[in-house]
Length: 85
Image (tube, rainbow, N blue to C red; front, side):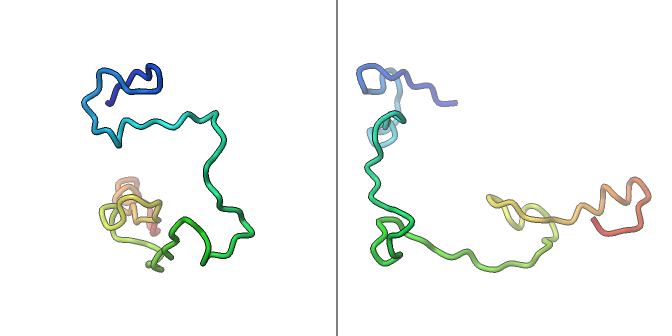
């Protein structure tokens, strides 16, 4: 785990890079200029559509980092179930 003591706005005792140790306090006003009414062409953020994938994957390793639906048939078979989970 990373431990960083915030003292006078700087990170003390950490060996992280300068970019990693720049903390923005959550109680400050946001510098973001985006609003829901802003057209996507003028948004300061990038938006990449996610590719459409199959609904059920063979195992969890096929989709690390997202929340997929996966088959867990081994669990059902161990309890004698005759259905696809």
